[in-house]
Length: 324
Image (cartoon, rainbow, N blue to C red):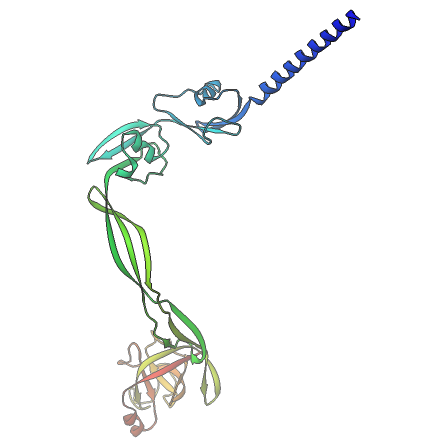
């Protein structure tokens, strides 16, 4: 009986020893952390027991210079942490008109300024604080001051265009005039070394909403002629006169070589190319086939076959449809 008690005691001791070893081994395994180190252009995966970033870097044989910096992707070294090493680079710092070149491993311009003793809310940096520090860059540090301003701002009325098939293409008519809106805005004007640098909107109150300006926009692309509805590509407002077939050369031959007659018009070829078919209300379908010394720009001369008609026509503004 006594021998059985001894054996049981030995078995319990062995079991406790094995349990302790297993617990220690399990705890030892769980203490490992998988981290990544980003340094000198390479990414190094590492399994570590260390909790301090410098110890982790030392395990990876990565040395830090006096001005080198490191940053963690997490608040402390943990499984999945990335440690980024920022090597010191030369940077030219300009402040109060004086420049000096320093060596800094600070990751951003804002952190660089803070390392020089500046408070972020008291300065303006060029480039901005979030900019990554690079070798050879210039960082300008200026004193920051602010001024609060109140402004009334007018907002232009939005324009709404509504297609109207009763109007010709290119024609717009006002359906509703619309009205601009008004906003009261509280602004923070920021100064850098006494000069205007930027503006921040602190508060904005709409006092009157804008009312839209509504336009009816023509999309009809045909014009009614004696030959039926004809498609046109554009409409022009032109100054028109009338001439007789015998005007000019006397033989009644146009610049394009055809005989001048009703339906032939003289144009500026830089505005309307010769050979273009036109429609002119009150005159009819016409062909741009002639030119004239006085026909420059938005001028047109209509050939008529009666002197009295030419005199009666005189000089007037007309609408000219360029047919497709």
